[in-house]
Length: 204
Image 1 (tube, rainbow, N blue to C red):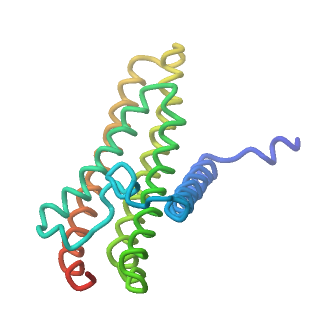
Image 2 (image 1 turned 180 degrees about the vertical axis):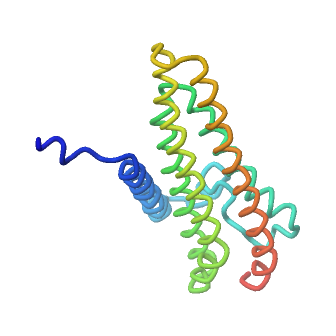
């Protein structure tokens, strides 16, 4: 057996490796977001939606619908962005950066909870941030994997390596996978908004 044969990965191993690397990238974003808050001269500049992606929940939000929209809209927009990137050869690095960007938002939001609430910030992170951040991060990690995977298939089609029938079938499968992820977005946003409505008043 050749040495190169020992290093060949099966499809399952490649998928696990991809998910593992994307998870590490997500946590790298969390660390980067925390560092950004620690090093910022004016932390208020990091409190906007572009940095927190509306993950920061406060007592100013009073309705279930507002909590739901704050969860669902940024997450679904990111997922739709990943879906579109699958049709472009240059989409792979942007898709990967989406996971890192989400991680930075989590890190920034957690830091703001600690700054705002002190020791109670731990409770806010565990209840108001961590469950939704973990679930939404998983959705985007799976979405990124599918986006990168389909981008490779799309490139092959553009190079005439795949038939039109195979291309049509792959698009349908790709769309169904993202539709399932979108349903998960809807579900976890609904669960989180109920949790946030109940606990935000108690914590703040």
